[in-house]
Image 1 (cartoon, one colour):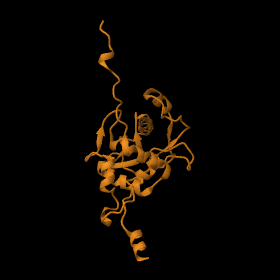
Image 2 (cartoon, rainbow, N blue to C red):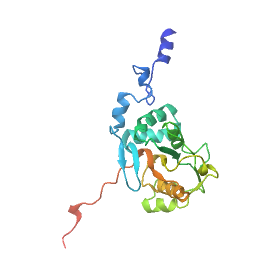
Image 3 (cartoon, rainbow, N blue to C red):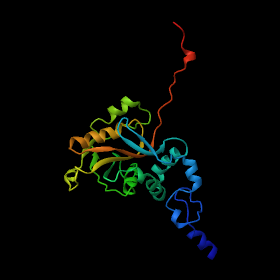
Image 4 (cartoon, rainbow, N blue to C red):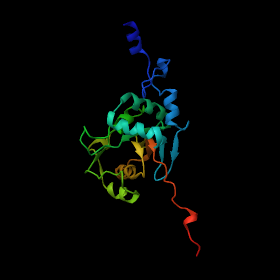
Length: 220
């Protein structure tokens, strides 16, 4: 019985639940998970189509993990990833998670849960005006059209006591693909006179490799 109790009390990796050696490490992924996730030491940063920061590329083990988190809402894993992401978040950031248009039971929970774990002020300044089409199979142009006027301000929240001369909104989402959703959210906030610093996400979709093959081009 003592052995079983000791097993239950053994510190575990928040992602894979493997036993780890120290309580101090139980809020971070284990070494094996870190190797599988293949996260750059300093994260990722970019400026197109807006300023963005991410833990890693949306591929491989990280992609599978994020898809699972949308379904199982595993708080320990989300908070562990948030801890890794926090150093990339500016100190003057006010976090605004991307809201879903779906019902609570069907909505993607990760943006809100991620924002709550990033150790910065978090405000739900946005809500969806209407439903949007699933974007998995849409190209960049169709995604941008799909998100036009898709957000509006939550009444009263944009006039809170935040000092916007110092703070900057950072939009929070789990995955940044073309940036169409983040741009629509940014445009809505900027129309309220709020300065947006950029987008914070767990993963950024890598650019598609060019299908150009010089061997297929004929002379003349």
